[in-house]
Image (cartoon, rainbow, N blue to C red):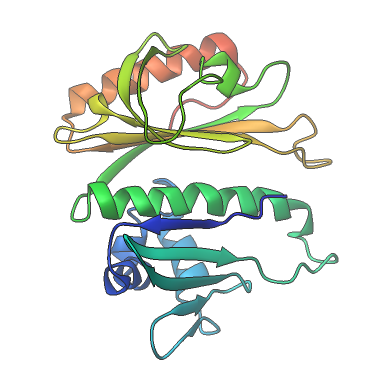
Length: 241
């Protein structure tokens, strides 16, 4: 189980709060682009049972998970506390998957506020099945430096990328990527996912590439690179979306 669901964001608490309470801003860091993203955001963050603290320091979402904001040196600490688990719920089997998702989304929130506070992201997404060797291993990301350090490497896709290590955890790697943004950097997250009995018996992995202000030709080139790798390594997986 992942317990450290918190990040320190170099932004003040009102800026963070705005990213939590405006649907268009939530879409810049929650999940990835999909046909049902707007509906998902509305259900999780803006349902009738969502509770806002009057001082804008906590937000309890539909489902019971709670965001807490605490000013600290260097910005705002943003934490997510998971709601009580209902073992009889249809979501019980997905509990660790949801926890890992919050870890990803908190880092995407930090990146959006610190690097592209007024930007509009375009995402590329891959869902991959489990099996021998994780996506992190197959992409050559097992030995990236510590968070905050520079890196330069050739991905398993053949892309030569560079930037800084944004974060690392037991099951995830986040890298800033110079070539994923016209100005500054984009963000690449690769996350290995836990086994879910009868749903994902071998585990799996996901890839989220957040790009900014790239032309269509550049986005298509990145998509083609990832899709070629997907076809070679995971031919049964769906194409990049």
